[in-house]
Image (cartoon, rainbow, N blue to C red; front, side):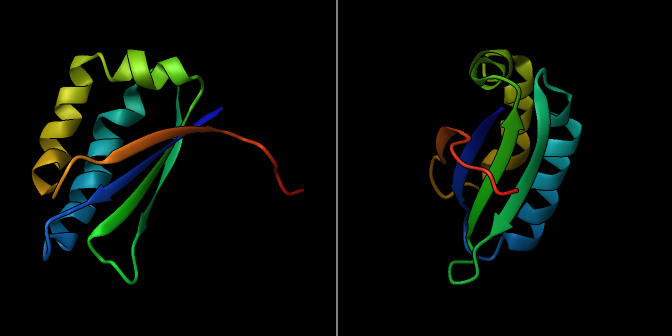
Length: 100
């Protein structure tokens, strides 16, 4: 399992609309992508325009190739992109330690 972590900053005052857009975008677009295993969205408390999107993928290539190089990626960006104050920072992680 690979964890994609996207650090997203949106335009001020757009939180309610973005909350709906990001949920709709994941549910209608990303959730149908090859290797998609689930997601979580966190909203900043001190910085309410900051969001962390965590997506679990079966493999790195499921995100970087299968999804990012597909038409679905453009569909996703059409839904959430207008809210972005700047390009999101996206990184990928492997599990290092897990609690029991």
